[in-house]
View 1 (cartoon, one colour):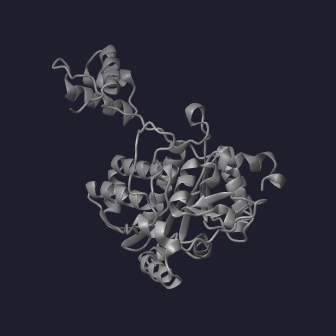
View 2 (tube, one colour; view 1 turned 60 degrees about the vertical axis):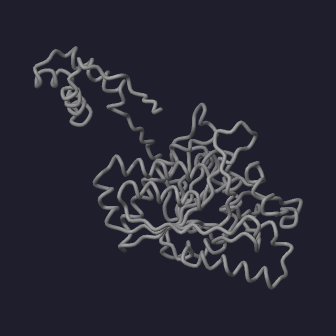
View 3 (cartoon, one colour; view 1 turned 45 degrees about the vertical axis):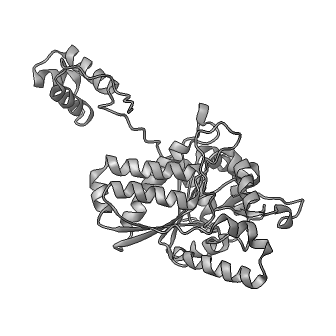
Length: 368
């Protein structure tokens, strides 16, 4: 049975009047007294109708986190030599969002993504995505932005959007709201591609989603295959990502890796032992698309993990490809610091938050 959050409507309300009052107040900026005079009703009635419009979700407020321009400029000066061409900094999280404000990051990254797609000169625009909860927030805010801006949606409908996953791994059983220690709430790349495609389809957009997946047995049995069979299987599945490597736009999340128990579950599924890849005194600093990198920003190579590699992203970031990375929260500082040890970053646009950008403000010389 459907459950509505709105209050039960009453026949005593003139909803034509209510909607007109709400439009005059919220869209034209008219005062309550102006509305009362123009509609020839008491000001107290205008006030009551405005409250009812909010109570019944006829009017819904949208919060746009302001860009922190001063921090953006500081961060841009620090990262320009590493190949970064643009930065966005959102306010830090507070309260329940203190660790990372995914809504702030999602809203600003989504609007940046809309502009990047519409600014692309071609009729077809290809987008390759990694995964994670922050990118899920980006996708949700992207769809919400289109619904709230019909002119933008109509412009997007003039293009065909091609979607690709950054890597081909996913665990086919997704668990949500399950009372377990680490449910599978991290959205895998192909699952995110399919979800975005379905949402765009409902809006009438032209979209083609590529979401090939090797079976989990491929990962579990890989080490038992002969070298010839390994090469054959890797070649077979890698071919699915050939077009993804030519995407116009990439959207990346940067994870903490070894500090995220859910990522540990992925490593177990892949049969990957990080101690074989990283020296004990270095360890793992973070990951992009399940690809871990060390404190020097060097990516480990796992033949069984089929992906657009970190090194390929670094090469692509030097051309006209727009590679947008989003991360927030102080816990991500070591991961970003590690990537900045590289000569060339695997992204050229950074959307981050005040918690990370302010370390440049406090002590630029010691920031990285």
